[in-house]
Length: 248
Figure 1 (cartoon, rainbow, N blue to C red):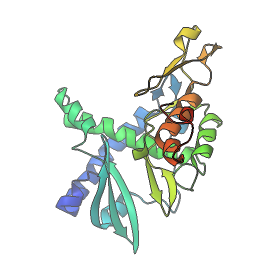
Figure 2: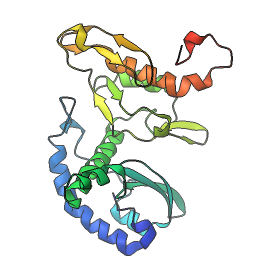
Figure 3: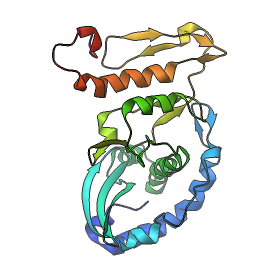
């Protein structure tokens, strides 16, 4: 992870960010050993692995021709050249909403950067551990992605920030590019009243069954609804029955 300011101000800033990275690295690894997400331990996702084909921080420092592509609340993405190849470099975004909000709350910059960097490290780990054709490395279709999110070794997975902006098209293939905001396991419950799924921006809610203290099927139904709202609706031909549309 690097400070994307280096893409504007040259390699000296990037090198400074590499020094900052080394300081944060040990803290991040210790922190991620006790991470939680919706009550589920995530230590089995760490430590990060690296093979001979994986680029490291020094490779990023040597990249040239940085060009800003896009940014979100936490991260920014740049294109860069290295060894006659073009790469997409995702970094912590110092001007992003996450760090700005953290600073407004009175926290030190290092703490805010650390918090944002943790999300990036989590995403790297998830991309390594969730090896599946639907996660960035291999092209996929939405149906296969939904099936994988409901049937995998980590239990059901919810894409909490399921938006078209989280996907990219590469050579006419749709790929999921951002996985830091996902939840593991259906929500904990005591009764069926705890298992009402509310869908934002839609006049629709769904009550599901509480079984063995879990809202069984919550994540799957949430993912299916969001996939329909953000993708399927736009693929349907004009004139289809209204009940098949997101607002039907």
